[in-house]
Length: 164
Image (cartoon, rainbow, N blue to C red; front, side, top):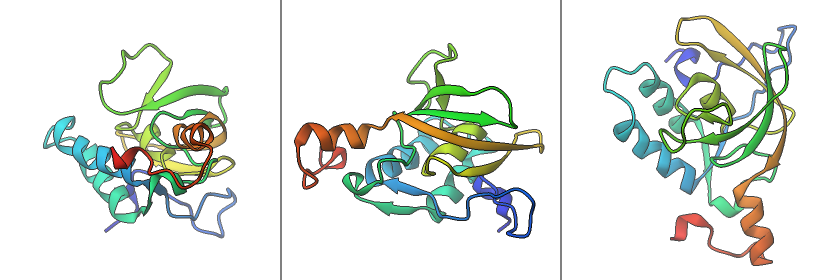
């Protein structure tokens, strides 16, 4: 399997750009939604299908309540830069949940797939659909649903969204 299959490439350590070498962390809820989305939202010939499958295979899956607060998850409001361009602030969504009006980034796109499971401060490289490359710096998170759920419950022992 090539590194390109993950949708989020990592440069070799001797590269001039410091790129995240960590495995993406997915909560059980996000893992299940992505697994289902491969069949529900993507055509059989979509180039994103093998990328999502590779991410699911490579990810470290944890109960949603154990996802670190600085990790990008579905529903997170994330700030990032693509190729050093202007700062973007988007909500990471799945599929056709929202009208594409510039507020959202779909996890079933190269940028969205590169963001999910990675932490604030990391740099990831994504393969574009036209075989080009994108360098994405995750500047920070303004909201993460799992952190809000823990704060509302007042406990780290809640059962999280996957218990529903």
